[in-house]
Length: 287
Image (cartoon, rainbow, N blue to C red; front, side, top):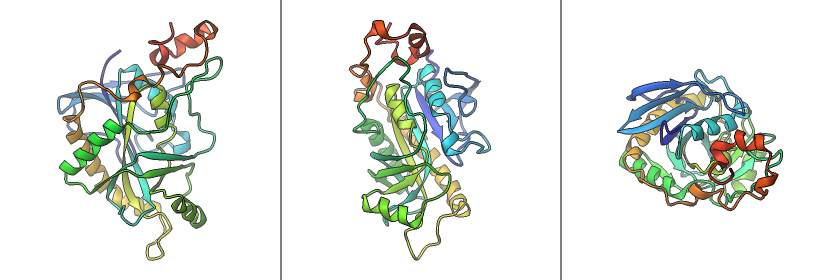
């Protein structure tokens, strides 16, 4: 099924995108359960996209509860080749100010117990993840942010924590000592699963606060985040609209062939039911 080429994963505050035409809502079920919400397909700037609010409409799903495998599987089933993921994050650096947008290039995983692979149960695969975000899509988003007049930063390491509680001061100091620039709760396992599904993935990390490391600022709170959220959401929508006209016609990045040499299990040892279950992901390599 090729319903759309671009997926947009909406983060906190981003539950819909205005201006879509030829709109169609799709309710999918997957082998990994239902996605976070109904997927909304439509045309924006002449490009067919699929939009999915990560936390569900009304923001009812905790970061730890996001059904990431179902979300990525559903997008792959629709023919999605690239995902623009929007997330609210805290800043660990002075230069990353609230209402700025950061296009991160690295991740540190501090989540706990979130299913982070499509594989197992008789199928072993190890994809490369040295560069967790698609470099080509990152460049497109940064250029679009500049054209949109948004204060943007190209490159940062994002620590993904479990939550839903915010960081302690000790954790914040530790993360800063690592050289990390952002703290958030949602880029993983999304980015890992997107790579396994050979989908290009890049994030618009929208800064809402300085976490709890600055003595001259109030510690992060939900109220503080919500105050900056609306501006961030409008910036993200503007960047997405601008980016759509700059996307390449064909992909020449390694994301598009991440599974080519990654499957370790001999084809005749892969259970037949698993071949059917994962057909949208492994079908071009395993028959």
